[in-house]
Image 1 (cartoon, rainbow, N blue to C red):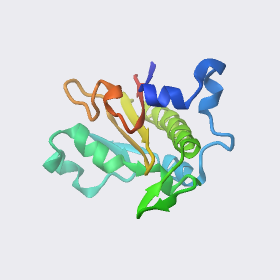
Image 2 (cartoon, rainbow, N blue to C red; image 1 turned 45 degrees about the vertical axis):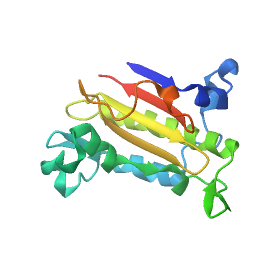
Image 3 (spheres, rainbow, N blue to C red; image 1 turned 90 degrees about the vertical axis):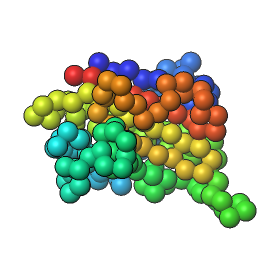
Image 4 (cartoon, helix red, strand yellow; image 1 turned 60 degrees about the vertical axis):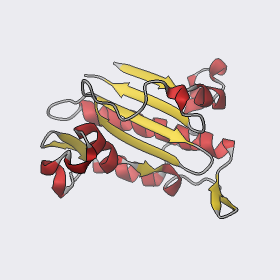
Length: 172
């Protein structure tokens, strides 16, 4: 099962009337993100993370409130560190234009599909959620296991007024 939701800001950034092909980056997954996907995933001590799982997994959730918060803190990637986009400096703050924000989301969506596949291929397949966002200063990607009663993001994605948000759920 795959479920994909996006807020109105993200929907407007992609003109989906022409189909879902607009979600795929022209050159495929950026090399740096490919390296992360190629590391693979590991499930240990009730948490899912990039391989190798951090040493403090046995202490999860520690200061993170719940296991979902721990996973999101340990799986987060700043997409703009790996995707070749133009980041200008205005008033000391980074600025990323709409076309580059769209590219960050595209890259995050492709990475999410890879992570969803990897989670389903684990010895004990895992249902996961990937949260991708981009705004005028950065883009982020994170994932976590889907757990009843735990969520990293607000269910009303339109509350994120300055971010383009895409959430993808992969079930087993």
